[in-house]
Length: 274
Image 1 (tube, rainbow, N blue to C red):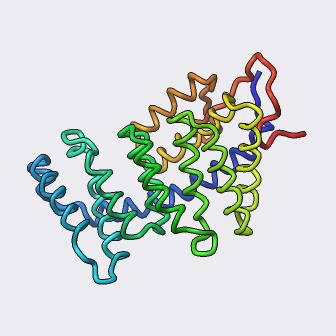
Image 2 (cartoon, rainbow, N blue to C red):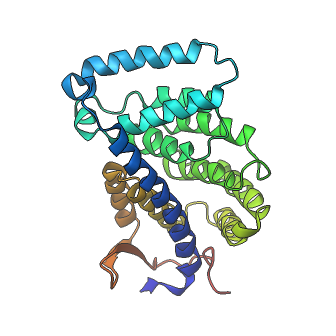
């Protein structure tokens, strides 16, 4: 038996976040075209990585004379070129990602859009959720709903890392409650705020909930799809299927996952009809 009606609100939230991710992906596509030029990355990726390591280290230590935001922007643009160079990454991997995000989050911890990539590359590609959380904390320390309307997303990324990769349910509950509180301060995100709080409440009654983990991995899958991150998508799909998810295709040919009702009774999931 499949659950469908009680997941509409969650899917609506995932769709909203996926659209936001797709918008970022569109920017990345334009930037890749602009930055797509012959370079040392294509000729000698290993040497290029050594040079980039030294350059990032120098930027980390050099004074910025008040231009921290510009340094963060420059680092992020270079990360996009680095991230999008699939051929070079096949040879060198993504080992420079932590260095990029250490620099970006130090120089501009309010750079909200960067945290989507930070969480995805460090947590799900490199398997370093603790380092990801360290950098995400720079964002939650510096941000607020007053200085950025989507500041709540940083708490949300933290909750995913804590729940899915570290198994730290109490910390995930706290992060979800903070995401709810911050989203509730911005009128257009009131529905998201309610869902975050309902999810936190549900985890309090069922810390090992298969349904919440299914929903969370579905969110990771959609984020990875928006970023064209096939490796993380494959990881998320594997986790979804292991939790009882069933892959389906809608009328437009888009893939999505439905959750099979577990045999043992569980409390009403977030967004379920009461």
